[in-house]
Length: 483
Image (cartoon, rainbow, N blue to C red; front, top):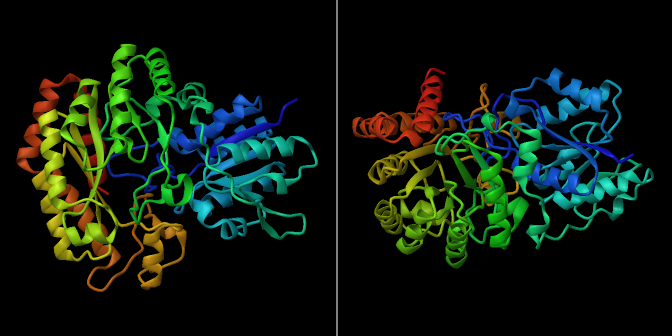
């Protein structure tokens, strides 16, 4: 009988998005798929292991409900995805399950565990190992070793683990996966284990599905933890035909789907590949609406090709309207270039979800006000305003630590009482409380502009495909305002 493996997004705040680039319960109601966990689940299933995935946060399952699943399944091995704000909770939960007498090997994965393997393993006795960085093949290889009964854990590349003597050992890193076509479609894992109606992205048509067509990002943004801890700087891609085969599978399997979101760090970085994708989509006759992450430098010709291929929206990290701040975070964009990009998106009729981050190196109350005004000038279809959240393993975290800006080392403080962002940086002239409040004020100021609200009413009345998304996002947003 094959090894029984449970891949787990553990119970915490309902709708807490561990796999977001900035994990939290969001003001706009966004709930991310446990995408990286699902990719690893697909790899384990491909190898024939008796595998089940549970997304407790997405499905709003309680600790008791998840523990009951574990009691009945009796897994040999649990892979737990963790995050900075949830790591203490996650470790305590796994300890509580083991305290019931359930015996399994416990491995933690994700950016936080990758950046802090020793610290994570020392949280309690239930922590057995950490799979560092891109973990699909690490957890697979570990499963093969555990299945032997007398595993040699030193053979598992990318693993940090507690030896029989209690000492922590670190194996050599696992190489990044070059042939991404070998990894099963993540949408097949969603179909088997998840309900797509549990997931929501406020900028996207509901319901939506999240996949990646490539991993890694060559850009140097100081705050982004995925390329710095998980996927690396080299952009590794699936073949276009492999991507289109998954698009065709999604179109057939999920009737009524609103949109596919391409979660590549920057899907548009290879313009030639983007155009090849758009041409292939036309050849396949695939009618799915899609959106993607992009940089604010995509040319008009590429945007028009994307629109022709049914691209509805691009999600763009604008971050700041002040050039000095953009330079400080190594964004590699210019204020004027961003303005030109928005002009191009309007001409191509591609919507934009704008991401603004307040409190970066060089930010003051005055520069933050300029960024908010810049957001209103650009007028994205939707916007998010986050306080700077620094995560272990990132250059931004090291900067904050070296400058003495971190007000606490208690990871639970990265979140507020509702699971929302609670930046832990205090700077001269800008406290963490002021920064969080400025983000809250920015949302209200942006979304309650008369002209903006009139545009949204018009969209609801004239664009049926947008209606459900707008009304759901507005309902969640108004609910959050009362907190």
